[in-house]
Amino acid sequence: MLTAGPGAVVLAAAGLDRLGLADTATQRLPAEDFLPDPGQGALAIQVRRDDSLLAELSRAGDAVAVRAERGTMYALLGGCTLPIGAEHTSAGLRLTGCVTALDGRH
Image (cartoon, rainbow, N blue to C red; front, side):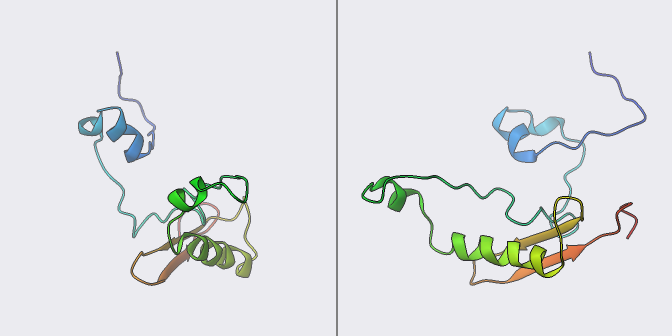
């Protein structure tokens, strides 16, 4: 049995959706307020050069978008300990970024 406590748990909505538990979420955090880490969700697969699987999995612009997101992090001298968010849209390349205080207040 789950009981409410003084803390909170943040789970990925995609995971809850996949498990059929989407209705258990009490709140969904808007992406414009809570940007993901640069490159979050990017997946790299190594295959042989002549393997046709790569062409089927690759989407145009993904590599450019990931480089732009990571470029944002590098330009801000970020890494694993600096709270940076970056996200791109699929309509061309429009990059949104943010840097927050280490304590999360600003």
